[in-house]
Image (cartoon, helix red, strand yellow):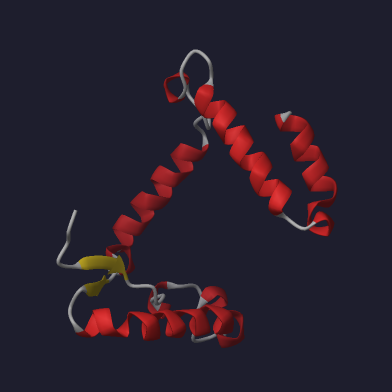
Length: 127
């Protein structure tokens, strides 16, 4: 497949739609790492941005509070649903088995000291 342009959601947060405690302008120390990563990413993408192959689009929820509230509502409702439904896996439970295997591999890649009690608890749950 070939595309002439790639649209990417604008990675820079809109400070105007954030509470002060999460506002990158009011709390710049909290966002230093993110900002450096974004600036580096922009430098790497600069040739594609200049050629018009990569375009950034703003998040419409930053300008429409009603849309943002609707998204929060949908997210809250989804939290109440079971993670897996019967339609998510076949009779052998392959998707569930693959998920457990992937999760176990991910945990195995973490440093031992970061696993601690949580690792042991979760690992017992998925065995």
